[in-house]
Length: 302
Image (cartoon, rainbow, N blue to C red; front, side):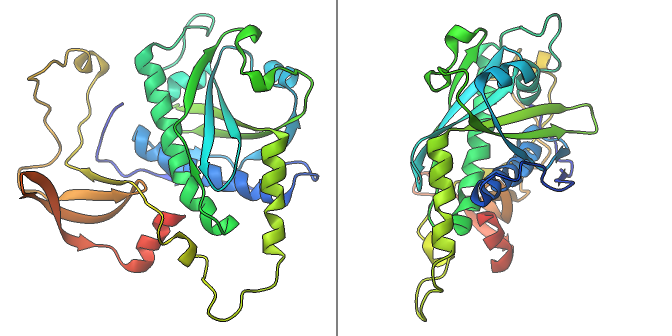
């Protein structure tokens, strides 16, 4: 994927458009996932991204196959904490190529992604759901975490996931369209089966319970022991695909920073500090030289 130091933008225009029978908690869930997906896509793909407010509606497998023809890249995403079950993120071949920064699909649109392309899509999906977990925690008053995505390339009905065996069973489909001013476009369809949807909807009972007594833990207290990924960025570079393919052991990549410049520290894909590289007992470390305020750091949980 290309790298650059340009300022990235993310917007979510418009209001939610979905059916009136959608459980309120499922709307909240859909909004949280897409709110997390926007800045994650902008960061990973290094481009301005606008993500439409998601629509939530019922759909059968037959209807999905009609509206989003095969082939699909299907990412099966399990829960590790907070809820049970799995979700399936459906990405059509053109959208998968866009997420993998491979450009448009030519011909009949059935060109299969190579292992590198699938790995790139998996990385995007894992980052989206990794960012969604902290966003869902304060909304549902419980720690929520997702496991690594399992990807499959589906070219015909025979290879659909087992959960899609009944083509007439109604599922919940959360749809969002991502677009960029440079022509980037991708559609995301998150499938939630009835079991997971019912569990998410039942979380509303906790919101209707009496207010906590004095001294009871606040929502932020519930997540203080949750681990978040920390990334230290030494620098960035932009390369053409033909140059990337020429890389070999010993190749040198020139970054956009000079020797001695501070490194950037990201938590949950958001920059919170700058620092300098140090060596501690033969291990690398970072001595922080500047850090954002505590309220701004709390935004990494959203």
